[in-house]
Length: 381
Image 1 (cartoon, rainbow, N blue to C red):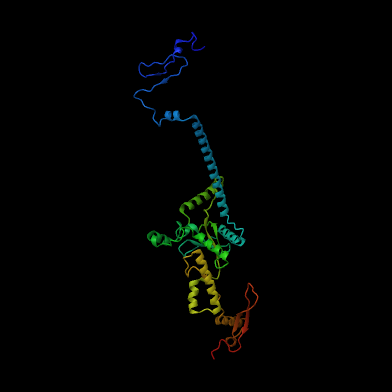
Image 2: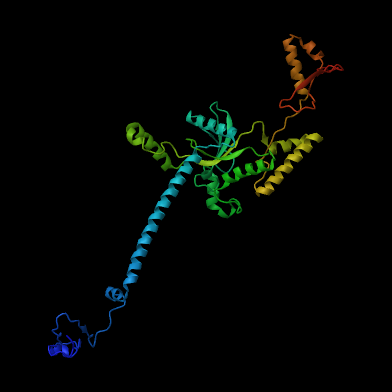
């Protein structure tokens, strides 16, 4: 049906006006299926910019779809980040457990010493605290009770919160500007100990005992009251309710990280020997060897930037040559074996013990014994 047909409705003949003023007399055109556009009132303005209707009306449908997709991607990225964080935490926990096992495949001898220390602690042969120095350090022993190493925990260093030397804590509290050295990194002394040993090995100076980072736990270490209470509570739970106690990751005290330095025997503080060398000068050859070793120490301190080198923190081992008193002891021992009288003793020649000179190097020294026949050693005429 076209517009010129006589059957066209009169209302269709003229296009309706869908816009009408608002008010009490406003009316909607009664057209089935018609659409109307309501004009705004004279005093009313557009919707507030922050209203949901305003944003929803002005947002295209395509942007809405993009926003939903972006929100879904954000949730997916967040879930992936949480999964990666969980994996990183599990890997860190596994690495920490591996470090606490104190495994050193590159140095089996050092690992064997650490195993001896752990076995001694299990047998209640605990490390003994060293009362010298400004931090908590301990003599570690083997199952036979012999000192085999020196252990310095991280949290018992001069700046550590569990330093057992309360005098240093008081000095830090009252005179913070006079405590320690500004060039030191806080709570990193144990790494400096291990680093010095590593540099010594790389340069082949052989003046620093082997030192590595080790985890140890012992009743004699300085723990906080909370750690000790938790340890006792876990042990009590394991005894009373084994099913509950077996679920704990650790029953005893938590292990402490620190430097583990092998103990060297026969050494004394350099201050002791230097004072003695002033009174009793060394032979020229021995003095040259001491000077060479000291120059190596200076080179090492320069490389690692050590600023705490005093005569009380480096050691010297010196085997004194046998003197006349040793000859007297040998004469007396021989006289007692032979049932000699005092007269025979004073008439015996002195015994001279010397180190045998050999062109071949050997791990053990040999000695030669000779008798002096010029004059009796114990004589007064």
